[in-house]
Length: 222
Image (cartoon, rainbow, N blue to C red; front, side):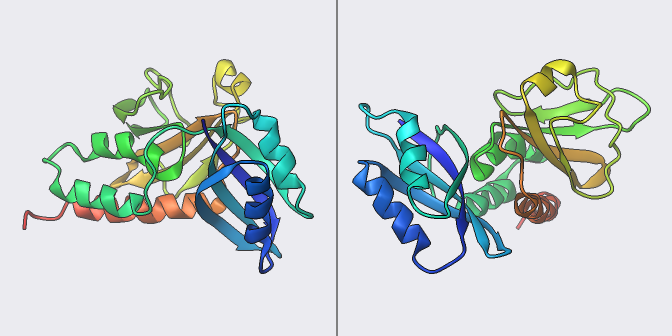
């Protein structure tokens, strides 16, 4: 079974090699590594690993934290295809998409790009219920909700303890981030239950991708 392991590690040469060695000695295969951010002498890495059937997920945590200075921020099951060009493939697909289908394509593909649980594209303002333009599988229902942060002038993190969240969502520790798409009245929202919280680097990556996506969707046919 595959898992997504988020690590906070000392930002020094050889640390990923030491983690890889520790995981390998525990019989755990590394499938991919994404460096999310670096700064303050630490780095945050997302590592997808394959765990043998006879090993427990706790073995992952024990093996990784055996390396001095390494902390496991989160561990969650991972499912879906892996590739190293997720953003480029999404933008290429958007450039070929039929008119009016860009929002649905974004909602369907962004969870794969960001290793998140789900995505939605919403439209509205703080004076009334929002409209769901598109939603991926596993997305919670936003139908009938009034969102105090719409219209959205700039990207923002939407932490799980926010007052506007339904109580059930707070109990599930649903972490979200959102960015405008095409206009402030429309937002792309990514979420996952049980954390970890989205990092600022992930938010900036979403802003960049959504901005390019908005331009690609509105380009005239070649």
